[in-house]
Image (tube, rainbow, N blue to C red; front, top):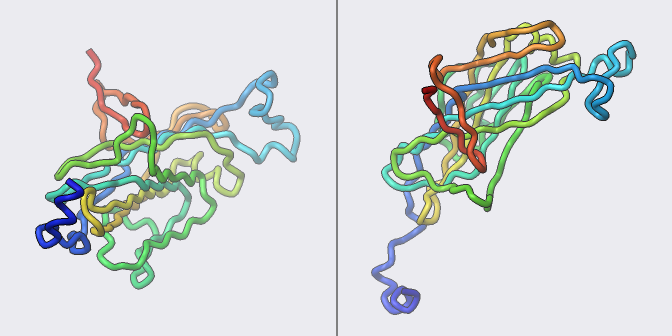
Length: 232
């Protein structure tokens, strides 16, 4: 095949003319678990009677993005970002969105999306050049759920927003044409939501869910993919 490509260059397409990919992202699920660990859990235990430790709150999280390729050709998508905070503003260098503007957006300019975050609760990202067992190719007109999870330390300037459940959810993705040069595109989602809260003030769960019904659950696959299963 390499010999043919060299012998007949006029038959090869101009790869620099790949069309701009049309992709979207939506934050569809977010879970936060605030825990108080017993003193025998070395490293994660916090002595809340000590003023130097009582402002450090351990929070586990799972944020799920619905990433869609609306293009008529395959896309290579390997960059994902999420953020959760009391206040988030998004712009692209020429246009600045309102704080907490809801909806999904495709960046139509060549200027990178800019984000301003005040008192972050969660900031996380993945850039996967190669991840064993994971496929970065989105087929034409297909969607996949991508989950970013971890454990973080939330300080007092952001914690009251999580306690009250009043937060902004941000997600971003970048992609390009899978089998041709160019076609780079990015998209983001920004939502102002009220989380569902259960538990006590310093040991509770907070949830945003726009994708699951009562008889469904999330399954987390190897890599970043998340699947919806139905209970039997």
